Length: 295
Picture 1 (cartoon, rainbow, N blue to C red):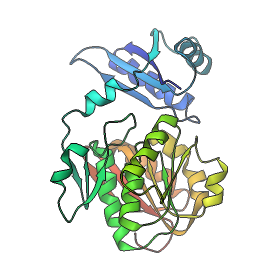
Picture 2 (picture 1 turned 45 degrees about the vertical axis):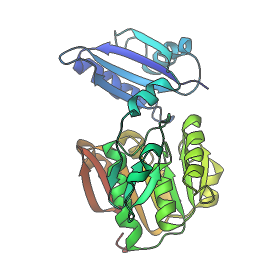
Picture 3 (picture 1 turned 45 degrees about the horizontal axis):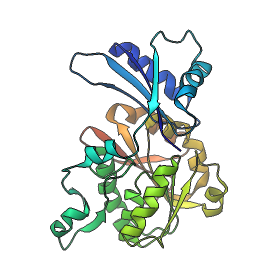
């Protein structure tokens, strides 16, 4: 199924407002929403990605959720190219060190230090190659968490390329339920698991939210890692908490520093306490616990 990109161009204030509206309107589905400036001092773009439907469906879908008077910007929609944009974006990327882990491409295999846990990720259409600050920061924190105590039931929510689940499997030799809403991402995550020799540890599942029967069947989890956007994370606070064991550890990333207080408050209301916060390239990683054990 192709990925459909819908974009609206406006000034910065209006684009950010539209982006917030889209996040709220499609919170349940968890479709990725972004807002950005392509050219310095130029117009801004609010963008949402759909993993189903067609470009012709995008505008009616947005208008149905937001209302026809929610904004004046024109909606442009197209099919996101399936290979070239990702391959091009990853060309020339160097290995990334994140604590005990090193994420690398096959052409850099000879650069892997003897004491590093290598995660091989090739150019592919899934968020989370390790080169982004939020993924690298989360990997670094997982290196700490996994060496302080042992875990037996692990969930990677929003697995993307599978890089976090692969790192967990390589370091802790534990089974991981790795899920994502994007079927292309889960296909690539499964391929990356085989590439790294940990396919026996990963169960890769395409699922929206945490309602699929496999979540309940695999629960209670003693470690959950979620590298997704702030608003979906807050909306999932209660469902995630219900799936977790006592004395469990929760690692959250995909967050801007400014998102921290709201996300922490959402999980404190579910009985979690903040253990650590880390920042890498302006991206925030939070480690929380729901018991007395120190992760």
